[in-house]
Image 1: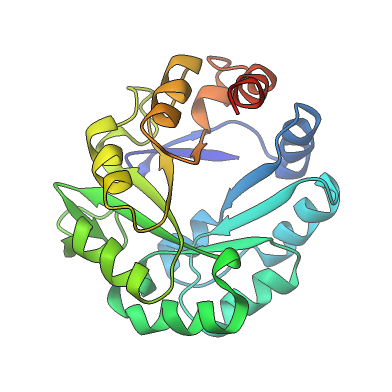
Image 2: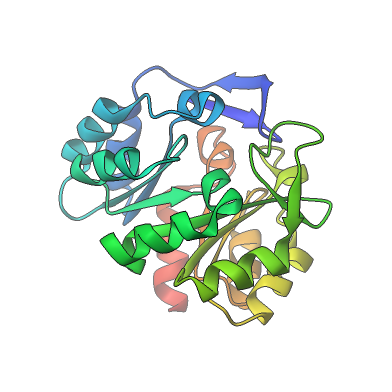
Length: 231
């Protein structure tokens, strides 16, 4: 298990070697979704961890849905991960480069199984967001375009907050929610129950939490309980 800071492969922290065990611990704590990122695939632009995804899906059981991201840049890659048991895939770079790609996936698999990653730096949704200078699209324009193509779920990552435990970018997330063009999942910086409550109050439907759990700053079972009691 590896966590990057600001999506930078030169700034990685290794938390363990067996993702199946980690996923099982998440399931035992009450998580209903597990977010899986194929970092090798994200860097290389090709899926690399389909077998690992299948093992994780089998380990957590039917009560937990797995969402997979990283390197899913063609129809075949997406189909393979869904066939391995993923409930939903996340596409980012390829969808930004070619919104018709996202539209085609949604038509084939359904909007509930395709989420869009919007990795944001300086107001731009960028592909290969960990690379400095990567070109991008104004994030509001990207979200609107992909919503018009049928996307209904967007995972919004403020790159400058990713993996730093510095709190979420509420201003960015609030702008995305205010567009009212789909469900917004907060990513990057959520490191406490206070942060989790804050993103929920501005209208995000969920949050991706990683490093805060691995480093013991946020208890997953407590987070699940908080969400359940506030629902």
